[in-house]
Length: 123
Image 1 (cartoon, rainbow, N blue to C red):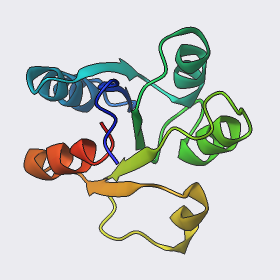
Image 2 (spheres, rainbow, N blue to C red; image 1 turned 180 degrees about the horizontal axis):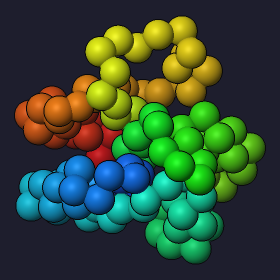
Image 3 (cartoon, rainbow, N blue to C red; image 1 turned 180 degrees about the vertical axis):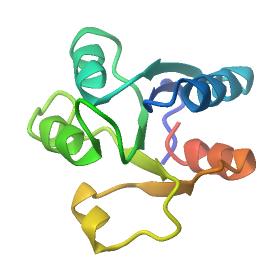
């Protein structure tokens, strides 16, 4: 269900161009999106800033990848229930992403109509 009072989104992707494009696109469509370059930066952000309604998370990143991020996120009651939508260039979602318990999946290159539809389900 959409949360009308919270349109904050955290976009986590190590690719600067993709991250900034997604943040720009979401901000241009009425959301308040910010970016983080890896899972460790995202955890730090989540512990000190306004909690987002949604996290958009790239699978493969240096420092802290999606699996490490989700483990840290889910172990913290303050941020563990924030839904996560995965983004990846992989063509298929295999069994190894099931433990991430994602609320959605967006394939790169990103279809921005699909992105907005997915985001609207949570914000």
